[in-house]
Length: 275
Image (cartoon, rainbow, N blue to C red; front, side, top):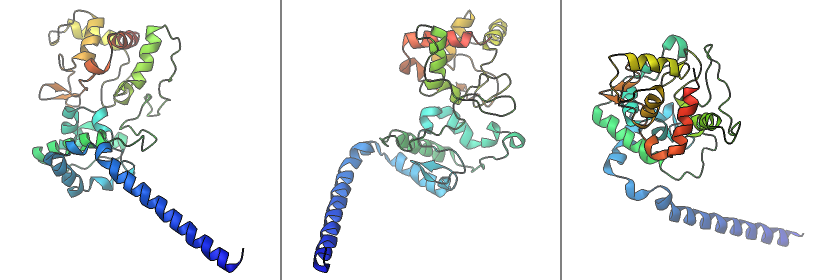
């Protein structure tokens, strides 16, 4: 290739690359309104974005993989935590962590109730953006799997059931794969509390709860109590400010719609096996 040919090759390559870049850019902007659900960007969502920047949340957290990696990614946080939990956590994060055990705490920002509502509205909009599986690795607040009493995290529940017709095995699979994942909030190890109580010994504890005069629900046996806790989590509130506030359980109330009756039966069967 002589100099003239090399010059033509360079110019043509640059022109083609610029054209491809321009086409992709135009195509991306064409799809943004659909991918971001632009019609759902309300004034409250916009105000919540301002709250996000005002308090420099991005200095510790990430959205869509962008930001600092000091604290968990919050892209899908509203799909893993209910509104009641998020409000209580933002008001005073120290209620949810033991500084001696976890060594780091989210600072208390003293947001107003309106700022908290706006921020949650913004995060809920973010969670529904079609981010085309980015970031590629889901980042949970407390992670899947279980944590041992020594603080070590075991592997998440297997993605393949031990036996396809075994309801307990299928329930165990759901425990780690339902949306939101049960294992993101509940450990199955004794004495290990994440966002929710440990599921270890659930059946035995439930019998004590049902016999207690403080029980507020309508269940009459262990199976009914577990089913009620999944489908109507505020029917009876587990004592402790980490688990409820203002009469509302922090456990998501979406399983009634997201789980089929068969899946609920499988999850109940698995939880009942945790003696």
